Image (tube, rainbow, N blue to C red; front, side, top):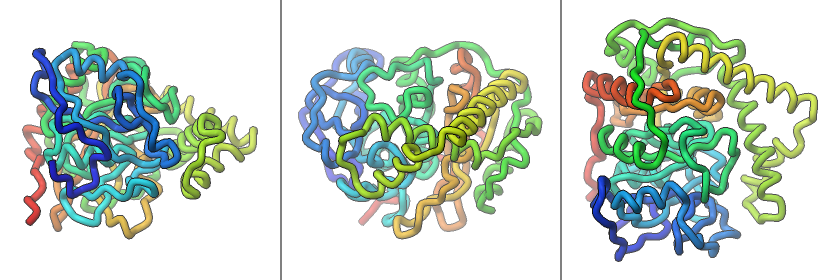
Length: 381
């Protein structure tokens, strides 16, 4: 295999599968998920020699279904960030444009799928880390509900927010894999849906145009809802929670200066401010669950900005829209929705109800058929 994108960190040329519903499906795995005998370091350089002594539960399920586990992928150090320019393993290139970020923290997962280096990749999503690379790489990504997928064998960023999920180049395969690896309800998605107004996030004009087109493609115009806090405040509270949890979990582990600086925000947060952060997260969870229960689903742009060059600073708001599904513990899908004028992918996400995963996929499939936005990267010379 030739990997021009630095997506894979370890590749097993001799990997094989078995008979089953996923027979012949090649799967790359983010290295914070255990694959027996393969690197298991969560993108942390000082743990680079660490190998998993067993498969994570989700990997075991995929193997039993016949999938071929081909290797492990590049990611953000510690799964904290949305750019995937790893200081130990190097930057992952977006298959749609060299020198551009694939998103993160599952950047290797998004790039590997988009570049057809594997049919499916597993990522993890703490505040958007599956859906952000899915959007930036122009593929499909699914975050299961938090309590519907096992965390066994996962180096967590925050167990209250984390979910392991798949990325793929079409919704049918994405659903097949999701049904194998997570609990999957067959309930329907009903109602007109909802979107948010006054969410306090600046949306890039080309993202706004694509999202408007997606709303027009829905069977019914969605209702408009409002949150008590801005999405940026909710995301920042989530970041503080994750940084505090990780700072405790990685105590004594040598990390890069960049990750150490990020972790310090959580470790040094004053107790009174931390309590306010937790109140913000709890309120956001209640409000998102209420909106989805009342309206059937919540639809938003996946990321406020299109893909950006690695040479640019990472936009702080990238997880402002994806974080809501994690706070509420709800399932969410990102699908390709359109393109910038200069050919970079833009995604839209749908957040649904627990137990109605089949209905969420049906709605995503209807919208996908209307938008018809999936486009593989142009071949490289």
